[in-house]
Length: 509
RNA sequence: GGCGACGUAGCUCAGUUGGUCAGAGCGCUCGACUCAUAAUCGAGAGGUCGACAGUUCAAGUCUGUCCGUCGCUACCA
Image 1 (spheres, rainbow, N blue to C red):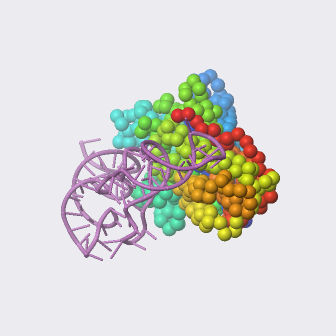
Image 2 (cartoon, rainbow, N blue to C red):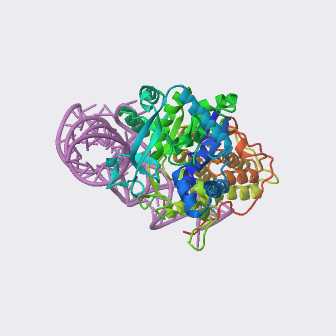
Image 3 (cartoon, rainbow, N blue to C red):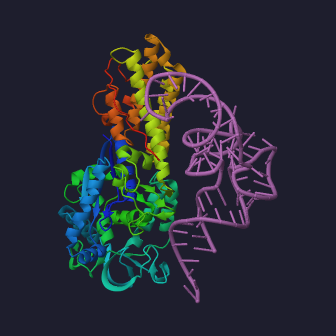
């Protein structure tokens, strides 16, 4: 059976979960759900990044230990994802023993292979970035990202011979189709690789909140290198080689464009240095912007996911529910470019696509079927005009998900929903007398709905399941298979439909 | 400075290899319908596809220049 391993970045516990984190995580969850529908064995990973100077200092300010600091924020991420219907198979924390063991095992391997050496490093260090910068990478001595002064630091470091891997990496990114999507970001990676690669510092002796370097107790690994290895830890690196070998070749990293360098240059080089030749595939998304600025806690412009899922009367936010939240972030921002977050467009998207088109279609189909088709539901017509349209929807939706383009995929799925509404208007079953003709129309509509439920499940898992049940189908929509179960004619008929409250009540803008 | 992306209807965007490519959705206007969550369906409203100049029988679709956004990256100082 083919496998699909997909990861979010692990989130730094210095920041509470915000919409930007949620965006990435929903994307990954949807990709994982899609691949599950395709019948692949999937493994979805997320987690938290908990080491580094910034956490140590933050803990100190708050009068707690670094671990206590990490504990309290990590659990907020865990809760946030549960609230968004995220079906992650694991949640990794870099402070866990399994991760310490994996980092030490992997880095020891790199060391033993001769790719690490000791040297002195002196330079300007941005604590917030956990990174050294050269003077011209700063604005008047201030970090460009955090707009805070960089500090002069000097320490004995271990260095990784990044420079030795340039050719192998270039070959990989140039010759592997689809390694980085969208394609534009692949060009940026190639651009980074074509520069002269400088060896990078991977340890710190100045702090102790980190994972000890196994061959030198005075050092801990620089938080970035510790963090990247989480992807290997979670599938058993070092602890369970068989499991690692099963999952690792199918690893997919979903990342924001700001962490391309770490993920596409440093990380695969370290994998190669450790003797791991299967390198990741990357899906790179842009930033969600508010008023043209990157969303972040420090900019104080973030709305919490919970405020949008549950609603917040005080601040005037409607209750979108899990599906409304997920759907907006999968449907509206193009995958790749930056995108402005707009509450108004979120409302509009919910009302149009979920309430008016999908929810309302479900409602009217159930009502008319109940009035015109007797006790149980009719079956679809094999030669229905909708059959061909459904086949197109399946094909186009599939192609777009595989290309990592959720907005295009959902557009294709919703076209089927709109076409089903058109089909009803064209046939006016509510005007017909009970009989074969009206049964055929409603059977077709039910079948189109069934297929739409499957295709929409990665975006709106809750509503898809409810709709699935209301049209009388057994089991879980999430466990259907594409394409086998999306072939026209799967709706058996003879089922009992259940009316109910509107699936997605309209929201007031 | 180098490399690259983008600039298509009010909004968000689609538009492989140049010839129904001038489009979709939303919004708007008008009309229809009444099964449905004031939902749905139909029609329309017309944007010189950033500007200019080229190549071509034919260009959003290729070339050059320019303007405007933005990204990655360098050097000098």
